[in-house]
Amino acid sequence: MSERALSRRMRPLRHVTFTLGLVITLCLLATAALSLVYTPQDPLEMSIGGRLQGPSGHHLLGTDQFGRDLLSRIMTGAVTSILVGVIAVGIGMGVGVFLGMLSGYFGGWLDEGFMRLMDAVQGFPAILSALLITAVFRPSITISMVAIGVAFLPVFARLTRAAFLELRDRDFVAAARALGAGDAALIARHILPNTLSPLIVQATISFPVAILAEAGLAYLGLGTQPPHPSWGLMLREAQAFLGLNPWFAIFPGGAIAVTVLGLNLLGDGLRDLLDPKMAG
Amino acid sequence: MATLLFVSVLVFVVVRILPGDPALVIMGTEGSGEAAARLREAMGLNRPLVVQYLDWMARALVGDLGRSIQYDVPVGGLILSRLSVTLPLTLMAAGFMALAAIPVGVFAATHQRRWGDYLSMTLSQIGVAVPGFWAGLLLILLFSVRLGWFHSGGFDGWAQGVGSALKSLLLPAVALGLFQFAVLARTTRSAILEVLREEYVTTARAKGVPERTVLFRHTLRNAMIPVLTVAGVQLGQLMAGSIILESVFYLPGLGRLALGAISARDLPVVQGVVLFVASVIVTINVAVDILYGFLDPRIRYE
Image (cartoon, rainbow over all chains, first blue to last red; front, top):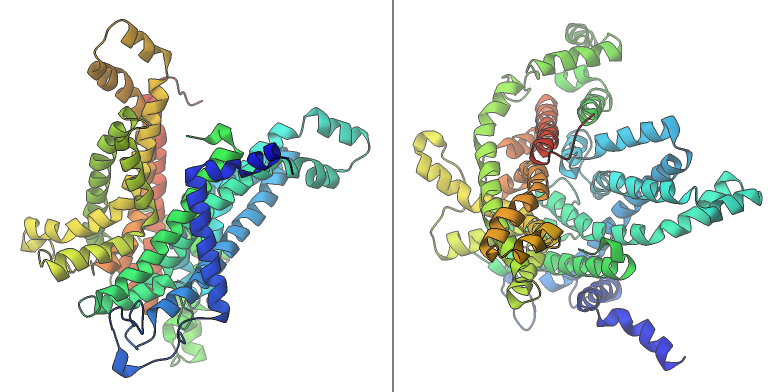
């Protein structure tokens, strides 16, 4: 690889926001991956004698109300956060892109209908859907994924639709059509790949929003349920013991904040790098 | 409007159809088949669904949201009484958000690419990363557990004195407003930077208008258009967010009403609160749209 090519490839790393975000995100992923094979202690092992301890050599971040090791629980909580984030954004993006694609490509009454539907979903906060759904079903991690994912639908649908509207009459599309490409091939092979970069940016921006929402729902008892480890759930439990062990409330919240900060920085950086038009 | 229609249909579908037979739900395990049939007839559950929906909507429009199963009082009254907590909380948070965010945003924009800008933008990055309920817990830790300045939660009601009521809403309002403050500060900053690039600003500067006047008369007024739009949308989000903060501070508002109703399987209350909050959000958004037309004469609605 020539030196110039190398320096071009390394250029994103000179973007401070992007690099900082990338480092924090990689640490998060590494922590989550590590927790699958190793945690300092068993995150489920209780010890009545060692309840609500502050940080110590044995328990680096202290223990919870059952004497379980907080560091180990926070590590496994990262998996839940990532899982909910990925699936919620996946639902929003998958369905949103599909609707936006059809809207933008075919237009007409289909477009009108889908967009009115998106208007309707827009402005309906995930917390209200979650309230409504948990009124009928038992709260679960699935409910938070769906409630959060649905809230993401409009933004992905609109982005995709706008990109398709812009691209569908371009010459390269007309050329492909003249060569006999059908609707499906035009959409999937020719137009969709050209809409990817704003969608990737949007997915990155949505990811931390999903993580915050998951924590909030779990905190209210509407989302992730025990014994699934979740940072929001840990804070719910910690609230009763604020006076006895403040660390119990500080560390899980800190984990959320650092994670979201890292992902936000990564998203902002990606937007600057991939999509200069959107840079603020 | 589409949102309201959607929400009302959704609320209706989820609550009326998904849990099975409401008559059986209300009767619990003790109801006999015959009694359930009578109740079903009395509740009008034998009519076509569309008729039931229209009937329910017609009642909701005049404020009749049904009766709470748990308290046996009208849901509408219950919501109104809890609103005396949620509404002040939301408004205080909005006030805090706007009063803090606009100066910070202006400051950051006028000190672009200097330490003041970097400092304020770092603060706002942190603000959007910290979950409101965790901020609430930290405030309780600091001001209640450590310093003992505030109660860690609870609300005595307005009858006990406006001062103490406002005091118990102060920490929750700050925690609730923090996230939206950070968003609004960034919006203000970029709106001002945008306007500062306009030619009329250059013209004003060129003809010797003092920088203060350029900032306050020419820039700020125009930059406020997007800022107010965002702030309006945020007002609705603050109301939704208050559901969480009420739990952190044990405030008897709409959010706790809904959560309590969920544990008690009090469906009409859940239904009422969701419909009410969603309607408020929709109303605010429509109001913002209209206001937008007033503020910026270039925008006209057909």
